[in-house]
Length: 334
Image (cartoon, rainbow, N blue to C red):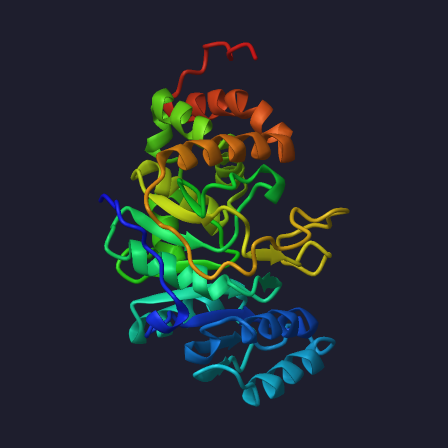
């Protein structure tokens, strides 16, 4: 797919913005900060908001869950608000699967946010413009509002880049290429993937994402493998890509100890938004920007997860031996 023209949309030109789906349970303060930020985004008044509220997992958090339900029922500033409230606690994964299935019965795309995300004021403009620009390209698996590397490492000449990654922190998904968690597990998560039986595939994956194999291997061994890891493997294996903004449109607040899978960070990855006043974006393909950001991301991954990157080859040898049966061969020197 080639794009030689500038692809940019003003808010009045986006007639049918993608709906927004937010998953939550009891983090009332986090959710309110997110919804307050969404309400001031251009296009919010044209956007349908779906909130999937899981039931409280204990009596201690039940008051916060009920407060969320009351707040969402009176929420204004969107074209419509739908609350899906579970009667019993079904957990994050089941709540997500049920909610996104319902959305895709009604829409061909959706913007997914976790309740501990906070968005820039031009988040909806970027997401809808990008999704409209790449909706016809089957290689575009998703559009992300989050970008990994800090803003100081951004290329000022680019609005976006393509990369074989995935982030659930503000993710634009297309119905015709979306894979449910159980489908990903069936493809890659029940036993060691044959994709990694080839050292060339391992080398390719390590070059693109130094932490991917170590995360995947750990998940296979422990039996607890995360959907975003399987999604990244699916993207790399099938030569797909996601769209990322040059400067992040999403900041994750969940590293305060309240997140399900997040720890505690002394200093957040991103502390503020840049270029929030930007209202149009150029989506002409820029391979120079793609290469630049992929290199920057790989450096950043290696800095943030040095042990995963350092021991990836040793872990791969153990994986290969276990899968293929080369019991007597010594491991490579690293």
